Figure 1: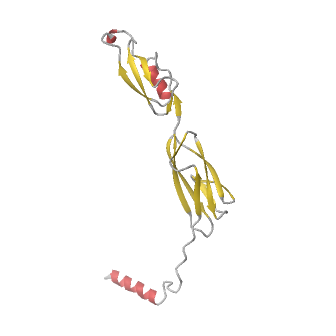
Figure 2 (figure 1 turned 120 degrees about the vertical axis):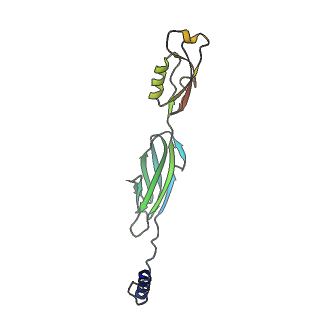
Figure 3 (figure 1 turned 120 degrees about the horizontal axis):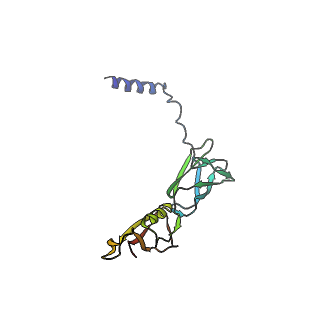
Length: 182
């Protein structure tokens, strides 16, 4: 019963002008126009930073890229962002007095390449240490034949793929053939 009373009371107030019924609703604000021209969405880069640029209107608008103020001049903006290894989402926001804010985001993937070290001849433990320093993954296959378990030394790397010196993405897997005697 109380709910009905509130609705009626609210409706009665609107009818007699007590809730601002005589005032027209505010006009929606015209939004800031924002466009990112570089880099392209879903781009893959190798650098640890990226130069973000685009246009904004009105020319006096403020632009923030990843929360940091961008340089705006004559309706164009630029900013440099630091990228983490792997996927990154870059957000861009623009504001101007008397305008609705504009926001956009795009994706960049940072891929680092590293040279595969020479693993052949190393102990398996040393190969694991070097791979870890370069953020490479290792898989091993046991070789050496029937008498290999009788050899008194530890496992060593006999072969590798990809070969030493090849450039691969950080996080890639290197296959090792290991045995006590190569």
